[in-house]
Amino acid sequence: MASLYRDVPLSIDAASAWATLRDSRNIAQVFAGVLVDVKVEGDRRSVTFANGNVVQERIVTVDDARMRVAYAVCGPNFEQHAASMQIVANEAGGGCRLVWICDFLPDERRAVIEPLMDAGCAAAARNLVR
Image (cartoon, rainbow, N blue to C red; front, side, top):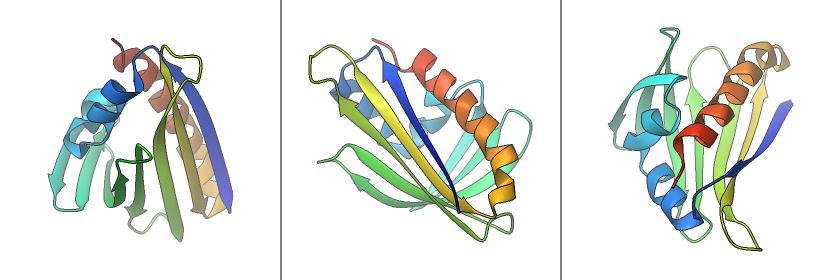
């Protein structure tokens, strides 16, 4: 199983970053430049990427105590897909981090997922600011 881990410093306080990230309707705003649209129905969201690809995701949990969202991609391109995004406050104060973990099969999907994840990290760093 392929596993990708990213730890992205953000120049925003943890509570503000979490308030934005926890609401699935805001995901296109957080990842603007990579995502262009999101539609949410219950625990399902449909995200449209800038390249026109549309992906169906299921929100597994929104954990306010840990500032963590877990989700899975649904569809024929994956045997398995589980991911989470967590906001972690900096211990020294001032700012926070986005920790994004994605585990999936088949491993060959890494060539598609990793560049999108890296672009998403750059977008989050740009868009989640004070």
